Amino acid sequence: MEDNPEKKSLRNLLLQKRENTSSDFLNIASEKIQKKLKKIKEFRDAQKIGAYYSIGNEVQTNEIIQEMLSSGKEVFLPKTIGQEMEFRKIKDFASLEKGNFDIMEPKDNCEKDNELDMLLVPTVGISVDGVRLGYGHGFYDKFLAQHKTVTVSLVMEKQIVKKIPRSEHDVPIDWIVSEDRVTKTHK
Figure 1 (cartoon, one colour):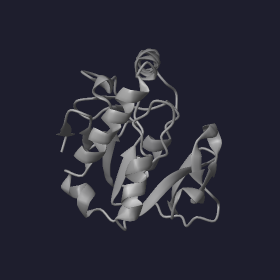
Figure 2 (figure 1 turned 180 degrees about the vertical axis):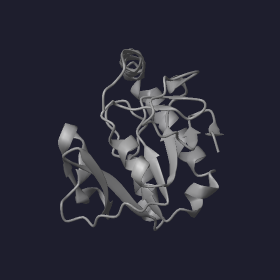
Figure 3 (figure 1 turned 45 degrees about the horizontal axis):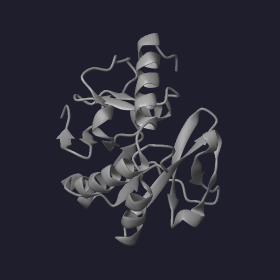
Figure 4 (figure 1 turned 135 degrees about the vertical axis):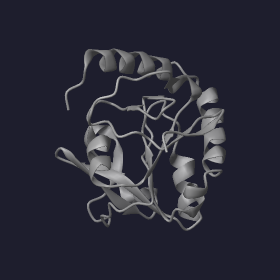
C-alpha cells in the first residue's frame, strides 16, 4: 500500500522517539500496560487472542503472551505469506522461528485460525480517535478489512498523537492501552 509523505514523516519521527526510550522505562511501561490490558472486559472474556512478538523498543509482549498461555487462552501470532498475513496458534515460544522482516513468527506446522476474539496490533503511533500508524506495509489493515475482531494498540504515552492522516484503507483501533490510561476509541 502506498504511503503518503505526511504519514512517512510522522512514522520516522515516532520511530525515532520510540527508539530513544531507555530499556528501564520500556520495562516499567510494558509492565503497567500489561496490568491495564487486564482491565478491559473484552480482553478478560476473550478466549482466542491474536498477539505479536515485539521487536526493538515496542511495548514488550513476551510477558503478556506468556501470561495468556498460562491462563489457558489460545494465543495466535501472525505469519506473513507473500502479501498476506494469517494467524497461527502457538503453544509456547518454541512454536516460533525467525520469519520475514526478521520477526519471530509461528512455524509452518502451527494451526491456522483467523477468527479471533481480540487482536493486539503493533503500532508506531495512534491518534486518540483510534487512527493507527503502523510500519507502512498494510498487513494489519488488509487483515482487519476481512476479519472483524476487537482491536487493541499497546503503546507508550509518547506514541499517542492528536492527529494521524487517515487513508481510506485504515481500520480504526477499538482500544488504546498506554502506561497511563486505557481508552475506548470510536465505538
